[in-house]
Image (cartoon, rainbow, N blue to C red; front, side):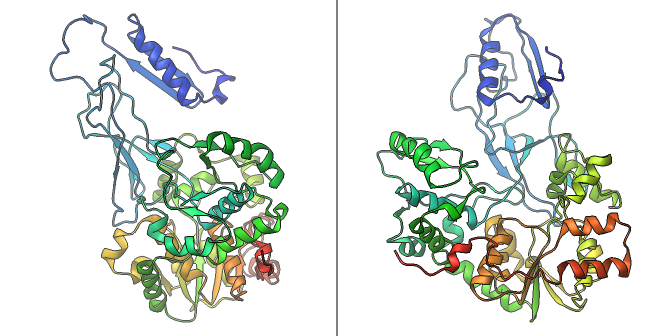
Length: 499
């Protein structure tokens, strides 16, 4: 057993290092119990070394190797988010040590011992040293983050820089929704391939000679311009023939040559079309919303708030409990001067109550029809709906059976479709979806798009401004901020050029 120290408290072992350590323990015949604490990582192994040569007692021991079975919990009626759980299944092969179980998670994310329902944490699925049975849920894995077409646009642009063939993109597993949808469940695949013809070659599947290979994974998070890709990534592509790119949100698209910009713009603005069935559902949703209306992208889910590490002392006990459960021990809120500095930098999500106040300061009537473009599980919505009473959501307007069958990416696609068609769009966050919506609205000549300034709100409230004085100051901050859209996402796509 090793105790944590200031040095190793900042370290997290790699999976390969953990696997090597566990293998070494299993090969030893003298280690009965082992515990390792390294920062936020903890490993505990216990074995029965008595009479190793005898047959295992009944009931049968835990399997030596198990497959990670991704079972999905449906969304509760109270709006609790679903998550992936890991359950014991039958082993596919035997292992040398019959006292050890290794579970491989189907996604990278937060380890949860239990679920949270209505702000209350349920008992742990199992405890240390418990004997578990086949099919028993052991834990829950919750992954933060999301995605939208802007990452696809970057990938297409990079593929064109490298003169490479693009395999039909795959979505990452979504964090907050029940998710298993693919690119073809949201977008018209044949239309995408047809529209990209002449710009870049797109194939649905890998060639048979390399289909069984794992791709060589390349981190593009710090890549910048075309020469960086040609000098560092192209040699890897030529060597391995099949590479996988991570999202590259720090791209300097302004450094791309014209042909790569043209390819990127074609992918983002011309080649993406919803599937026929999803577009039909989006039109039904759009028709059901009273006109005119404002689309509001509001982000105040438990995981979003926990990830921000901001203090919200005035929330209800159930909301605070949900946030604490979502953050765990690793995402405790900042306190003191750090918390104040963090908030003044605009890092803290706006609460629904703060959002309502800001909309009022912008002189948006409380009788406005508002479509809520947001996921399930928003906290403190009473503070918003008590002011703006005409609020409409997907779950209200769609057939309940259709809605419960939808995956996270299909729900996000509906929000995107409605938002680029709304009379006005307001966002409390500046994420991938917001950038794409703003750019597409500008592309269509719809300029009533606004991003609420969290930084300005924090600065003004820290000065002690309240009520009408605060509203007046917020109006002055935002009065000239209605985006014309050019520059919000892909500025070069507003230029006309030919190959």
